Length: 617
Image (cartoon, rainbow, N blue to C red; front, side, top):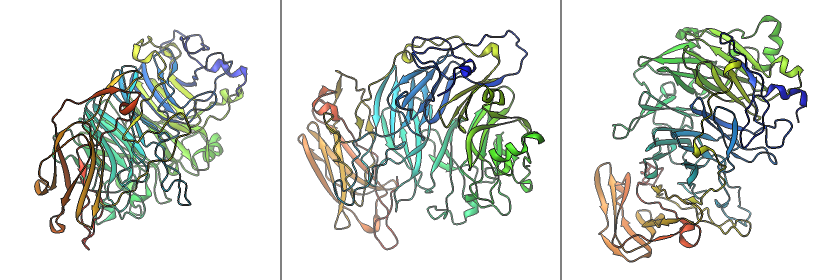
C-alpha cells in the first residue's frame, strides 16, 4: 500500500473506467524528457496498486498501446491493459499471463497474445501416483479482433505435439504471424513454432536446432528470431559449437528456404571473445527504429559479458562487447559517489549485468536497455546508449526524490517500448509503469477506437482441447500420450461469442499411432460425408498413399503401410466434403467443442538403428 503523499507522482487523465491524479502541465517545450511513475488508479481507489507481473508492453502508435499481465488479485485480474493517449485502462480480464505473456500487433484493431492456459489440459495419469501438474505458463494463444476474443488455441498436455511454452510473438501482417518457444519434446530436434496464415494456425518448427526461442521481431520484411544456446549444445545439426547461430531468419511466405540461420557468411551475431562460448551469453533482446536493428544480451556465465550491437546496411557492428572484436565495455554507469549503489544494482561491473529489456528510441538513433543483477531485482536500472555505443545517461527508478516521498522499490525492468522520440514506457517486474516524456507531452490526443473502449470478459473455448463441463471443477480427462507419429495440424479459426453460430469443421479429433513399428493408424471424426485420402511424402516424392475412401459422418480411421527404407518426412491428408458443412450453436452441443486438426501433419524420421526418432516438417 502506498501513502497518500506519493499520489502526486502518478499522472493519468480521467476516463470512464479509471480515476486519476493529474500533474499540471508545463509549456516549456525545451525541457528534457524525464522518467516518472504514472500508475492508473482503479475505480474508487485512493492510491495506485501494482498490476502484477508484466510480460510484455507493445505500442502500435503513441496513443495506442497494450500490456499483458498476470494480475495482482484480488485487485487486478490477469489480462490485457490498453493505453489510449490519456491513460491506461483494463481492456480484458481474460488471456493474461504470469511472466511469459507476449503481444503481437496484427493491425489497428487486431492483435495476438501468448497467454497462460486454462484447466482442460489434464495431467497425465490423473488420479494415480504418476500424476504431474499440467504446464500452463505461456502455452496458449488468444486472437483479439474488433473488440472481442475471436479465438483461443491450446493443445492437450503431455503429447508429442503439445504446445510448448512460447516467448516470441510477431506479425508481419494480419495473415502472417509467428510464435516461438521452447524445444520440442525429446527425442525430437527443433524449436516449437506456430504460424498463422490468415485462415489456420499451423505448427512449423525450426528443425535445425533445439534451442529455445526468446525473442522475435519484424524487420526489413523478415522475422528475426533470437535463441538461447544451452549446455550442452547437443540438439543441433551443427558440428562445431562456435558456429551455432544465435539469430534465425523467417523469410516471407513463398520464399525458399522458409528458415535460415542469420548471416552464416560471417556478418552476423554474436561477437565472441576468445574465451567465450555461445552458451556463455543469454539470448539477444531485439528492437528496431529508423531502419536500424539493435540486439543486446547479458552473460549467462562468468566468461560472458554485456554485448550490444546494431545492424546497418546488411551487417552487424559491435558497440559494447569484447575489445578483440571491436567493442568496448562500460566500467561504470553511475557517478563515483554512487558506486556502492551501482554495485548493489548491477554487480561488480556493468559488463556482468543481465539484460532484461530493450527499446530503440526513434529520432536520435539511441536505445534504452534494462539491466539487473542476479541478487538485486528490487529497483529498475535503465542505461541509455547513443548510436555509437556511448553512454548518454543511466537512470535508477524510483528516483531518490520518489523514494523520499514514499515510493517503494518497484522491481526490475520487465518491458520497454518507445513509440516516438522522447516518449517511452517501462513496466517493472512488480507491475508498476513509468513514462519518459516532457511535462507538456505526458498526455496525447485520446484514441477513441471503439474496439478498445469496453471490457472484454468472454474467452471462447480453446480450439484443440477437449472441453470439460463448467458446472463443476474441471475434470482431468485429456493428456493422451501417443507414441510414434504425431500430428500437429492446422486449426481453423471460428469466431465464437455467446449465442453465435459456428460452422463445424469437416475434420476433427485427429490422432495417430504406429502399429508394429511401420504401419500408421490415423483416426479422426468427420462432421459430414466426405472423400479422404492419406499421402506420405519424402521431400516432394510420394512414398506411400491410401486409396481415396468415401466415408459417412462419424468416427473413422485409415491404415497406411510405411517403408522403413523410404521413411516419409511429411504426411498430407486430402479431404473433400460431399455435403454442406453443418452450422450449430457456439455455446451448446458440438459447437461448444469445435476443434480441428487437419492438414500439415508431421512424421518422425528414422534413427540410424531404424527406429522412429523426432519430428520433421
